[in-house]
Amino acid sequence: MQDVPRNCEVDRWATQTGFCQTGRRARVSSAFAHLGEEDCLRGWHRSGTIFFSGCSLGCVFCQNFEISQLAEGRELDGGQLAAVMLQLQAAGCHNINFVTPEHVVPQILRFDKLPPSAAP
Image 1 (spheres, helix red, strand yellow):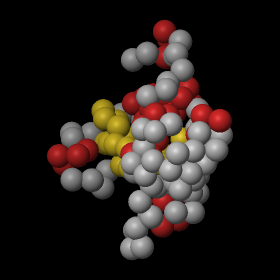
Image 2: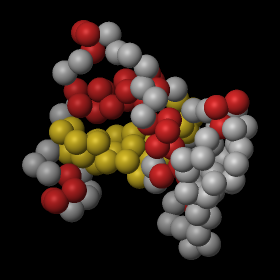
Image 3: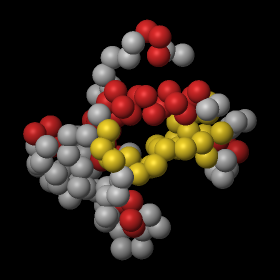
């Protein structure tokens, strides 16, 4: 998988992990309806915020050290990640705000098919 910023050349689809400590599945630290963002980010309702664990940068002064560098959280496949987004939508969130998603873009785009009853 070469579609990540650091390009550490590991095969994450084969469950290897690279610098970002992410393998085949995206690791999510938390997902919730966020009211604290600026109006332009959260809009007229709540923003469905998903914090992804791990990071390809490793900044020394990161404000989310436990999430980004210790990779706290649980691994989700595409279907589980889609279910989290639908739960946020059902909670009244009208958008999804990904926090630190650069290293998990391939996993985000790899949604399993949802049953028609799950579609909004």
